[in-house]
Image (cartoon, rainbow, N blue to C red; front, side, top):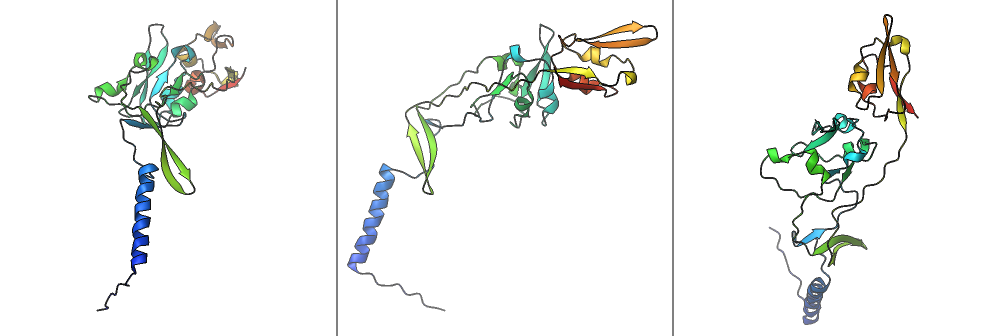
Length: 242
């Protein structure tokens, strides 16, 4: 067995080692490098584009159903409102916070907040109805400071400010490209009227001409939601720029 030897240190070397240790302790007490956030008394400052709790503005919704169609977790269902329009509801028991729904919303009706710590009493309460998404939720806060991670010369430390981080951010206006539905192959239309039935804005109508059922699209009423394009049996409808 190999014998381990310890190098003898002089009094000066021991004093220097102790001085360095005291210096590190003093530095930590004044300028700590700890990465601990004392939640809930402190709250980490989140970026404005955090994928958090969803809010909804019904006046911007065109009832296109795209948020429900694109949701990979099947967490969004459409609910009929008193005005006969359909608006989204979110089941947070299924939601994975991918925010595909926000990305697909052409009118900017869905937008995010910085809220990510929501508590529910049971699974049923996790189903958030449209009415609950319209108003900002009540937030009980204990934090008095906001904490931000700072990387300086390969060192990570926290910067604390005596302020509360804003949890509700202004939604980014969507890039609006006016679109309308258009039939690209009228000869292939079988007159099933599925497009007319799914249209939420009465933009599609039908007229019987002899033995032929003619479909007409009113471009002034059409919002370009794409519902008819998705449901067309013959796949002859397309969205084109208005």
